[in-house]
Image 1 (cartoon, one colour):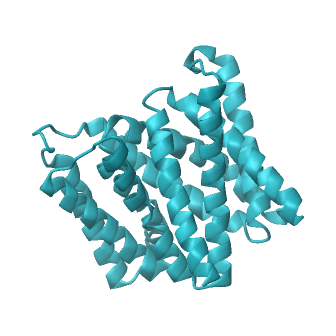
Image 2 (cartoon, rainbow, N blue to C red):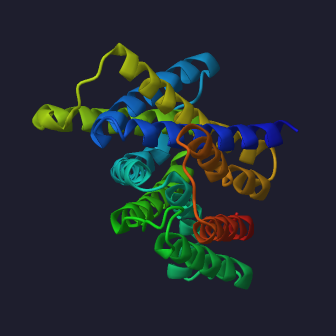
Length: 280
């Protein structure tokens, strides 16, 4: 039961943080949103590490360092996709990051099962349908939004592979190290390119810090769920997070998808769940 609750908690946290980050990226620059989200993640993981006396990453620290570049790129691409495209389409495509390990296995000679390959085909077909079908009012989805979502899926999926290795001894310490280095890189970047940083006040920064803390806690929650229970169950339940993002977009942004777009989004999500379930 604990593993189930942790998995559902991770799914809820990821869904809420994606919605919150995407919404904020419609007001502030993506670099601004990601910077404060990462600072929030550092604060949350630092507090959790102190509270639980988590062990150090150990010899697996190079994987956390390597994940910095892919996580920054994936985060920026995801926020941009959620900002310019319908969240109901972008979120399921970004969730295809869970299929990257299966693709990696295929590329390295560890062929996925036939069911996993079928799931990949379904997810791809759903993404094409959702991106090419006319919207609720007849409008088309911006190709850039789909492109950013696909890029985010690839980079975030790569980060998942790296962070899985980095978390061998402690997920909390691994996430803390990666988020700290990521925040440092982003700070240095905006120091060199200050025009990219949007002006924000306390009322704008606090939600971004909270979103970042929530996202980082989701990673640790998933890691704990996969340790206490079945990795497959944890992966499948956690991969349902786009449902939360879509529902929030519908309720708070009045975002409506056409039937064809909704079918494509559901196909994409179903394909991702199948791949994750058979590859975990």
